[in-house]
Image (cartoon, rainbow, N blue to C red; front, top):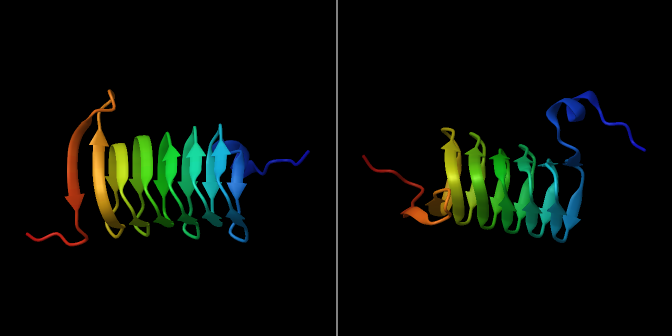
Length: 132
């Protein structure tokens, strides 16, 4: 049995796809998942999804919470909080409970925010340019 590193044990993340790994196919996890590599396929994560700076996803994502620093080409459904870090690049529609975006993050697509009852409370197309 492989021994988890201190970082893995302290963060609570038991599944990691490293930056030198490419997975072609769908990924399903009952726990949390960190991706620093490439995934070509859909992700269905019951816990938290973390996409690191070097992570690249080509496919749709469904998860409870997500923290994205890498690149995603596909639609995203996050039941609770989606956090886009400053170097995140998202090309696709998102449906979320809550949204946090750091300055510098790029998002191209449509955003749909839902309440706890999963009924849309706001649906607004977003553009990559904001005019004041």
